[in-house]
Image 1: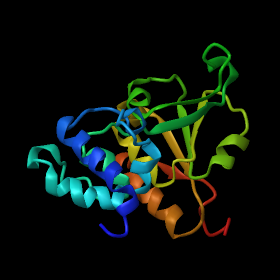
Image 2: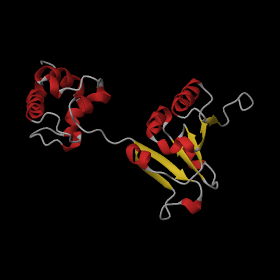
Image 3: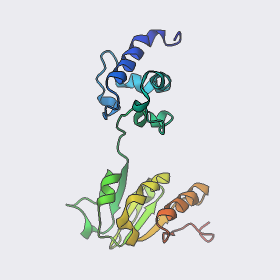
Length: 194
């Protein structure tokens, strides 16, 4: 309390807001708290978490969400949607002339794009530099976020080729991808390339 004495009124305002609006379903930057800007909440999430856990009823706290990254889910706020970025490598399959797109993961799961070959790259630049190719697309820059693809049933009947770094992370991501898509193969991740 002594360390935060200069901010105590804002802290109390935030606590009151969450008590009056549990599980609001708003984005953090949407919160309208008199005298408190949203950057204040972002900067004080650790302290606010400790206090919110005390002042909120049990049903207003999602105990499965933890840490700074889990703050929004823990206290009933919306998270920014996870995006999946992809490039349509076949110009004939572009969407109204667009070939480089980012869409929320849940919307991507509902797509059923016509490409028969799906390349997935760990890194963004690899995806951006990927050459044009008939009947193919590349999903890129997800890293460990490849887990988001497991909900994409339409990918199960596609030829999936993963290109990651030749390091422990690259192979862990490939393993994670193969849990959802066991037939996924790898590209440039072999002894010869190394």
